[in-house]
Length: 84
Image (cartoon, rainbow, N blue to C red; front, side):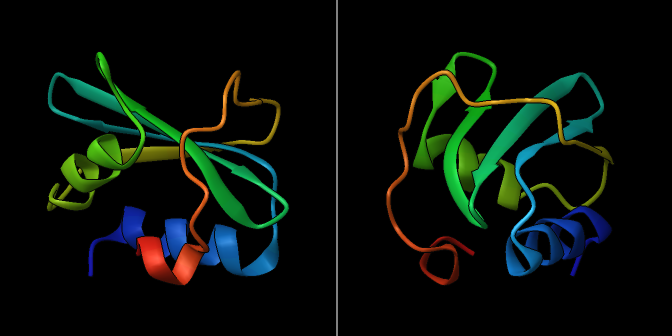
């Protein structure tokens, strides 16, 4: 399991809000959390679950937890275990 995916799972498990920013080479993405659940994701122009699926395929990259970020919209409504 990649290190960013471990952070992704940990972040949801303890209920942290904010965003998880991920970068692989020249590609960037953000996964937004609220109340321990994923509520939105962006990867370039792609949004929602399609963005999650792209980022889950990344084998490596840099990530940072950004608690100040808030999702402008909700595009994902399934529980975290269903997403990961």
